[in-house]
Image (cartoon, helix red, strand yellow):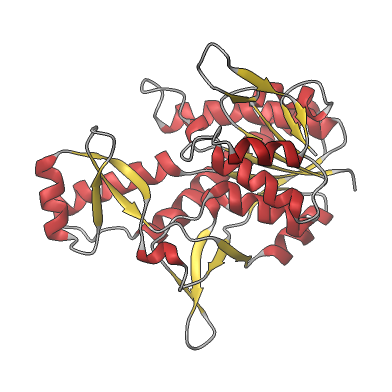
Length: 315
C-alpha cells in the first residue's frame, strides 16, 4: 500500500456562493475537488476522505421546519440530518471518484461508510450549547420555533438573525474504524466520518444511542488520521496558506513550519475560533499523537502541497 492521506473537505467549500446552492451545483464543486484528489492518488497515495456538512444540514432542517409548519409533518431530528448528509454527500463523492477513475483508467473503487462517533454524555458541551446550525430566522420565526421546540436554544448570531445552537462534544471513538481500515487495506478510496460523524453515546445496556449534537469535522478527521496511522493529514479550505494578521497590511503567509511555532502563534491569538483555530487544533492534536505531517491548503494547491511546494505544512 502507498502512503496514506486523510483529507478533510469543508462543507462550505461545496457551496461556492448564493447563486450555486442547488444539489447539482454541489456535485459540480465535488467533481472539481475530486479531480485534485485523484491527482495525488496517481502520485501513489491511498486516500480517506472526510467532509463537512454544515450548510447541507441547514437545508434539511429548514425543509423539515417548513413541512412541520405547513403540513404538520414530524420534524427530522438533528442526529438524523447528520446521517442523511453522510449518505447524500458520500454518494456524490464516491460517484465523482468512480467517474474520474474511469476517465483516467485507474482501477480503483470508492465507497462510503456511514460512520458513528462516540462522545461522552457528560461532555461539558452538553451543558453549554454553542455550535450554530441551520439557517437564520427572523423574530416571528424564532417565536414559533421556541413554542414548538421548547428544548431548542436559539440565539442572535452577529446581528444577522437567530440561529439554533447545539452541543459540540469532543469525539472519543470512531465506531466503524475497523471497517474503514479493512477497506483502505483492500485498496478502496473511503469516504467516512462525514460531518464529524453521527454523535452517539453509550446507554445503560452498553448499546449506542444517537444524540442531537455536532462533532467538529476537523477534530474527528484528525482522530481518524491518528487511528489509521496516516502519513499525512490534510485539511482543504478556501485559502492556499494559513496566515497571521489575516486581511491586514502586515498579513503573512505561513509555509513550512513546525508544531512548536504554530503553538506559539495560537497562544498569541492569531487564529479565529470560528475559522482557522479548529483546523490548527486538529492538526496539532494529530501531530502530538504521533502524526508526521499536517497540511492546510486549498484544493487546487493539493498536489503541489503534498510535493512540498505550496500550502501550510506543519511537521
